[in-house]
Amino acid sequence: MNSTTAQEAAAVLADNLSPAFELRSHQHPLVAQLLKRHSAELSKLVRGLGSPLHVVLPQIFTENVCRLKKAFTDTGLSGDILFAKKANKADCFARACAQQGIGIDVASSGELGKALAAGVLGKHIGISGPEKPSRLLTEALYHQCLIAIDSVEELVRLTSLANVINCNARILLRRKTSNQANSRFGLDTKALAQALDFCQAHRQALTLEGFSFHLGGYSLEERARCASEAMDLCLQVQKQGIATCRRVNIGGGLPVQYVAPRQWQAFLRQDAPEHYHAAKTFGEFYPYGGLAQSGQSLVDLLACAVDSGVSLADKARRHGIGLIVEPGRALLDQAGMSFFQVLGVKQREAAQDYALVTVQGSSLSLSEQWFNSEFLPDPILLDSDDQAHCQAVFQACIGASTCLECDMLTWRKIGFPRVLRPGDQLVYLNTAGYQMDSNESPFHEAELPKKVVVDLDADLELQWRLDGV
Image (cartoon, rainbow, N blue to C red):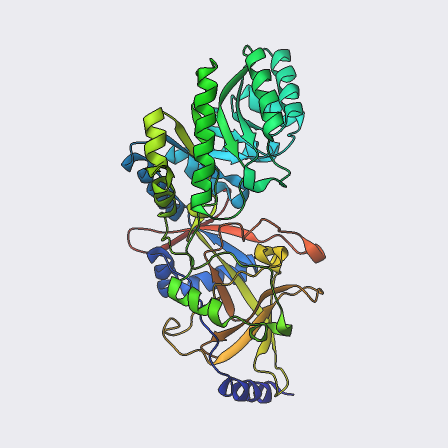
């Protein structure tokens, strides 16, 4: 089939397709400006630096930092923010942490080195993860990082290291919550009692500053309850003579709103296997259309009632307990987007109502696929006229350029404003949080995607540099 005939066939297919259900991603004003005014320049970057290409926006990250800081100051709380480094590896975000005076949560020597190299002080760095290697513990001791202890054995090992180098260890004890009884993380009731006794007996080597906990899911009420219980533990330990126990790490899990709640609820009501390639089904989805707007989740969490109607913030303030929060997505909300170049469009049989589009790249750059889930916000077609308001006429699912049947970036049938063609570029918005590099891999010897730091100057002209430069 020649190219003209192929285009005609695609047009016929497009005319017969009904619009796909929309999950239109929110756009920060800076993102909207970039896509509206600089689509040609962004397209050149993709062609020159390769697909997929991740664009990161540290100025939006900084805005999110300021919102979370304000949530603490508005309630009169002593609060520390530690950026969850695992959420994105870009150096520019670590540098922004140093510039804004916030900390970073790390779980490896590599992450610790990156945080220190970015200018974050060791005393502002939290060390998490189970059974940390002795090398990481030793580095954390030298830099006076705050170490979350996950087991009695780890606590004993850390104390031995501290004694060898004649250094005091700043620690939190990570307790296992009652609703996470099967979690592999944290100290159960018996182990926690043993750890507290050990801390009492080794005060010369250990400074117990408080407690942390691991909690899956996005329930603010459940997180507030666990934080309240940790505060009670702090008060008990203070009565036992450990006056330094005055901090609670409430973790991350602050929900981010990617799409309008109205669209999200409509999507959930009509969601069905026939809306996906090969009638794919999933375990569960991230709550992309939760009710909290960007930056509001921490405010809502602090306002949660814990003791007879007393808010979490009021309880912390009343007892002089400092809170630590470890946001990932909440700091990266709107702070990045990912570009994929179309390689080909496979027309389906007449009975099928969608096309299969192959892009250069893989779903390793949209990490939800590797948790039997889907990154649901609609990708958009770069450089499409009035793409936010036109009626979607061309339905397609987006596949990767690997030889794996399951390697799909978007199983869901997405409506585009026109027939897609080789050379087109698709943009997935708001991908900085956990999507860009949590599962990146040089599969098929493919080069790892590059990250480009982008900004607009005072004249709204695009400025860019490779991340790390």
